[in-house]
Each structure stands twice: as structure tokens, then as C-alpha cells.
Length: 318
Image 1 (cartoon, rainbow, N blue to C red):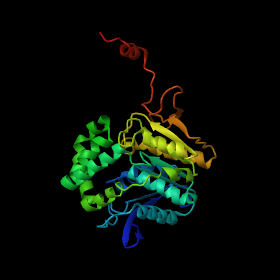
Image 2 (tube, rainbow, N blue to C red):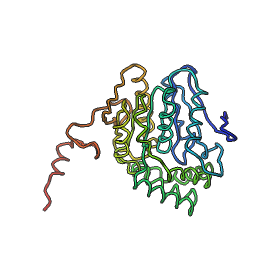
Image 3 (cartoon, one colour):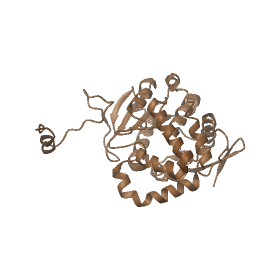
Image 4 (cartoon, helix red, strand yellow):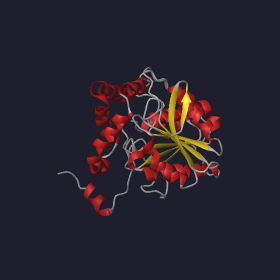
């Protein structure tokens, strides 16, 4: 198992794919670990990409410092990993907490990457997100990692995904308990509570940027994505239908397809973000279409109902 060294800390990582191919660095969210990205690694490698995945400092098999973990340290780890990759153009993507690290990296080291994909991310901590974070921290302190994950599953995932996977949740919780330490997670979460907004620095991100947001994400809802869209010059917001916060777990094939297509568009000179707004397809390979004109993109995606369903919906109340 290869590892990087940051100070006195060891960082676990995996690297797969052709040496000179375009590369993706994928950054975990809170409580996540390398294995969660394996479907992405396989899908992207099959399309000619090199893929780097790693456990953040304080998570998974990487070192778990007993004191405060600064987000700048996480950015430096990404920088070390990018240096390790070398070769072709490099794209950075991260989910939630990992999306914040990706944004910070693009602000500090934008000249080293070809593109950026923040997923369910944020550049500011809204009052709602702050209170949710405090509730999760209280759950972690009083109930441990098992209770934190009990909170995270319904916050992050849809009924459509949770229902068929109910019997597997205990095993997932056990793996999270084995790979994550209460104190290390607490240290990671504490970095949110003195979070300085990144918004003033977003215009310095000059690389092509695809912002991915689940249609029904209530942890990092559309207003937080809008902050990134209007401040990153070459950005586009792509809304993923019927998706919640952690749609990277629910829809790995679709999300990997969107990542690959974005990178291919950038490398072919086809990407023109123009701070535009799009709707992702329901399935991999489908069309990415402009958000319908005349509708408010801060709300859910408007859908034309089949005639029978529309007639039923429009029946007036008695």
C-alpha cells in the first residue's frame, strides 16, 4: 500500500491507470475512505484516465493526529499527491468536505490543474449548515461514530437507495467505525466552526469548473452552489436529477460519466462554462441539457408530466 508523508503523518493513497494519461484526484467527504471511490477508479481507468484516491489526514488508514487538523494541511497533501502523479493534465474533484479542499487547492495551486469539479460542496458555511454541523458534532461526541453515521445516512441518501440497502447499513457503519477515530473526526469537524468564507477568493479560480449539485440536496442546497457559480468565471452548474447530497454513492456510474465527459470537453477545447446552468441526464451517456428557460433554477427541476399524470395533478381540490 503506497503512502505519502506529510510532516510526521503518513497518508494512504492508491494510483491506477496509464502513466501518461489525463488524471483525476478524487477527494473524500467526511467519514469516507479510499474504497468508496473504487467504482470511479475502474470506470475512469477504462476510459484512459489515471486516478489517484487517498484517505484524508485524520480519516481511513491515513494518520489520525490527536490535535486540531488544519484544512491547509489537507491542501498540502493534495499538492504532494499531484506532484506524485506528474504526466498529463490533472483534474481535481471532491465531495462535500472534500469539495471544500478541492476549492482551496484550486485557489492556491490553480496553475497545476486543468479543471475542477466540486461536488455537493460549499464556499461559505450558512447558518443552516452551521447548525447541522453542530448537531453532527454533538452526535459524534455523545454517541460515537455509529451514531454520527446513523445521522449521516438519512441526511445524505434517498429513500430509493436506503430501502434496498437497509440490511447492508450495519456493515457499512461497522467499517466506518473500524476506519475512523472519534477524536480525529472531531478534529476534522472543528475546522468548520471557524470557517472563513472562500467567496472573495473564488474569482481567482480561472480553470474550467463543473459544479455538481443533487436536485434535492438539503445539506448543501442550491444557494451554496449558486455562490460558486456566480463567482467562478469559467463555471457551469450541473444539477443531478433525483439526487441527494451523497449522490456519488447512489449514482457512481452517472457521476463517473459526468467527470469523464467534463475532462474530455476541456481537453478538446469544447468547454465553455460561461456561468451557465444545466441538468444532467438520468443515466450515463444521456444528454446534458440547459436548465429550462423561464423557470427558477434555485428550485427543483421542472418536469413535463405525461398527459394522464398532468390531468390528475391539475384536478382542483373540492
